[in-house]
Amino acid sequence: MAPFEGVDYFNTELFLSEEETLIRTTVRKFVSDEVLPIMERQYRDATFPRHLVKRMGALGLLGPTLPARYGCAELNAVAYGLIMQELERGDSSIRSFASVQSGLVMFPIYSFGSEEQKDRWLPLLAKGEAVGCFGLTEPDFGSNPSGMLTRAEKRGNTFILNGAKMWITNGSIADVAVVWAKMDGEIRGFLVEKGTPGFSAPEMTGKHSLRASVTSELVFQDCKIPEANILPKSGGLRAPLSCLDQARYGIAWGAIGAAMACYDTALSYAKSRIQFDKPIAAFQLTQEKLVAMLTEITKGQLLNLQLGRLKDLGKYRFAQVSLAKRNNVQIALDAARTARTILGANGILDEYPVMRHMANLESVYTYEGTHDIHTLIIGSDITGLDAFS
Image (cartoon, rainbow, N blue to C red; front, side, top):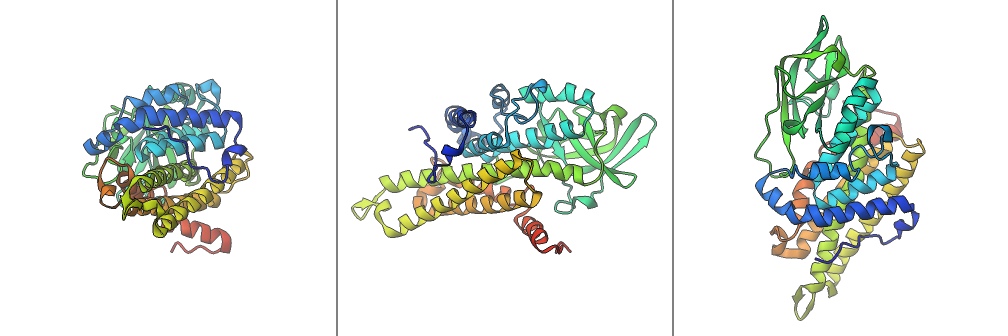
């Protein structure tokens, strides 16, 4: 297989620092050498390649924007985005793992945890020696997390946790879960460790999408949490929503990686597939499809780069993250569907990654805020009027 050269029609690489380019190249090689050769089998067998976790830790891909004192790479937001882009070129499950570990587990521990919690968990999570998950969504509360039913009650030096969470990436393999529950009417964060009595994490099966990702329920039945395991700086819905901003930012970049994979596959196929005595790339309709894909990928790359620079300056807004997530996942899904039409019947075979990306992106389209919810977030931001109810 020829090395992946990337898709960069507007030369965005000229605006990357030397460090950012090196990181992107390193992760691109990792994905080509170690992820893609096994991905179709993992997807077919519905198994997560657990052996890659420590490799990602060794490469500095977990919690990469956090301080070096915790064993993290201390990179900027653009470098983090490029990591997510390349990982999702491999598969959404790989990016989802890294995204959850980094943005939904390490970020809240760093932002809302005690020094003891940070010193204990962050180095282990950064190395991939521990796995984390994030419990916010519930069976009946997804887009409206403020309605959650999971409750915590303080009894002496412990908290008693009761409730359930749903659609939790990494849940069944996690050593620690960052769980959000209502206590005295306020949403608080708790660290629930694997093996805690009353805590179980059954894996969800039967998925047609994200098959190589571990997706679980989290169930709490009179689960006793020590006082030391509450995130002391958490409080209110703003805390978990700030974590979702981190994840959505990574998704915006990751979706472009999936789109790049589909476009590159379709372009190569169109150049080699002969019909009516010439490559199908020579036909106007095929060229129109390729140009449309390339145009949207290029727009998404420019959007991501600007968002990343704003994030590094501390000047980005959550509605801008919603716009990037909403746009880029939509155009990636469109690219996958268009690529499938170029490949024709071959597009459904796992010899090519297109159908796998298409199925995965159907989930990415609705998780971490559905397409419609992000529409309303942006609509509220530009009009000053909420349309959520």
